[in-house]
Length: 190
Image (cartoon, rainbow, N blue to C red; front, side):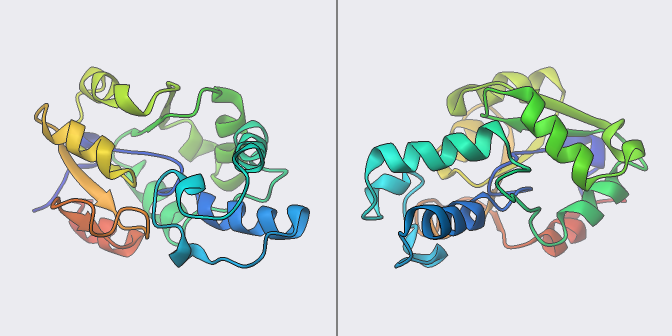
């Protein structure tokens, strides 16, 4: 299978941005919760699998959402290179459940050259369960997300999902997965 760049879209957190690393680091450095690793995050709802008070989980994620740069959020290995290559042939569409557009735009501008940012279509739509509408609006056939529930919803409406493998989605679906941006690159017709 070779996917055309214009036909695939991406989630941001857990796919392009290494949000779990930022969460774990902030929980330890700023709140002294240092006893867990990425492999301990076995549920998309972090509070369901880690012994951290729910208000603190919300505080950490809110900080990441409001100012991704100040919290040190980094790209996933390989994401910048692959997305940069994709923008040479077509716009890249990012559809995130984040409610705030500007912090994502600031983060993208920091990590990607302006020529690449000019060819990124960003949708910050604020709802995990409404991505299909925006995927259809952008005429995408494929979408990569780390939330298995989202991917199942997409499969139900004739969008081919690819689950970006993370500890919180392993064993929770029977859909096609991708392990890395190298693997994504191999699926693309660039």
